[in-house]
Amino acid sequence: MNISKSEKITNIATKRGFFFPTAEIYNAISGFWTYGHLGTLMKRKFENLWRDYFLKLNDNFYEIEGSNILPQKVFKASGHLDHFNDPLTECRKCHFRFRADQLIEDELNINAEEYPLEKLDKILKKEKLSCPKCSSQDFQKTKSFNMMFDLKVGSTGTEISYLSPETAQNPFLSFKREYYALRETLPFGLAKIGKAFRNEISPRQGFFRLREFTQAELQIFFNPDKLDEAESWNKIKNYKLQLYLSKNNKITLTSCENANKKLNLPKLYLYYLAKTQQFYLDTLKIPKAKFRLRELSEKERAFYNKIHFDIELDLETLKGWKEVAGIHYRTDYDLEKHQKASGEKLEVLNEGKRFFPHVIELSFGVDRNIWSLLDIFFKEEKERTLFTLPTNLVPVEVAVFPLVNKDNLPKRAIEVYNSLKDKYQTFYDFKGAIGKMYRRMDEIGCPIMLTIDHQTLKNNTVTLREIKTMKQIRINIKKLESTIEQILQGQKLNKFGKYIS
Ligand code: ATP
Image (cartoon, rainbow, N blue to C red):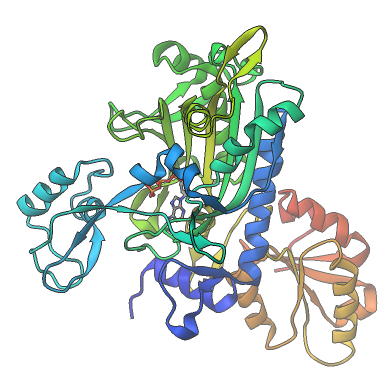
């Protein structure tokens, strides 16, 4: 049977413990997934890389943790209550409900995200688009559907609240406390890695569009007079951005300097575009050809975003470029709205001037990035499938096996395993023939496999096998730790000895 790449990855993910539908024994509601043991290890690694990288961009960037349930007033002020809507269409025949813009996008390959409802209805009719479920072309009028999950808090049920649809509100709500706690210094940044909840109309695309997901967001508060200043500008001014501008349909390599002068993009914003691109290309090792920074036109972006680029990756499983993160210049929209609604002063007096700090927001969907990494680093060969993930993201770093389950080999293998497990994410396996154990580790992307055999008992050496080429070298146990360390840092196996096969 011919199955798609997406199904292949999902099959491995569910079988091997990356992720699987939540409550699947009860036929699960779509859009909710549980990370299994491997997925959790990988997700933590992604989050830690993100933390390490983005929080270190400035000494004044910090992480906070806040509530996921927030009162109605917050979302009235932020605009979510009135505007956080998706266009909902219902098939008159089978009553299937779906997003009109997504059907149009899928069928006609155009971005219909911000089209008004009437325009969507017109396109559905004119292009004779069919219900994804029953193929009827008879639809009800498209309506706005608010995507927030509401809750009643407390025993009286009068305190209407919502599950936060983005992590960003916590930093805005914490702004005043943190600004003063951080000695009234700008710029400063508040990051939150946490859950976001959206009642997506028809979560399709498996693991990509979820109803409960994790976002990693950093809100950078700064003095708007300094928008065209970036402390480390000299370090990035010649760096080439892979820009996909709204006016031309191709990626152009543009230095930050040129983007500043010719495209009028401010230096502070460009600095974060450059740093985000470097995160994808250098830290996550995304191939250049699969990465672009897509500018959203005025029509496409939210009205409060003055500049908006999405990070898009070219994903085979989803048939093209898909958004995994966004960089939004939100101006003073949020602080101004929250001051107005709460009556709390959020303007600051800084360097002799009173103003609302402006905000650049870096917003990443963690789960979407996890899926994208699995898509990009999935390989199929004649006898095996593997993930060639960068070593800083692999869930299991080292696997240890005895060649056979006798002759004292398991005992020696467990000794080796015990000597490594505190330092590396290590897995011990003895169930099956060696070839099968290798395949199982290939399938989850484990980069280093060690086999303990009869020679080990004689001369204290083991076989170290590399995932990508399947080549093996013989190495002394004494040198194991330093070799593993270097391989995890990106060194090639042949640096450590002659190949033995
Ligand atoms: P989309 O257009 O795909 O619905 P969005 O533009 O609404 O996404 P943002 O509100 O900018 O997304 O959220 C920031 C990031 O959060 C996105 O770039 C994406 O990675 C992630 N994200 C948003 N919605 C979802 C979802 N339903 N499931 C998983 N991740 C999501």
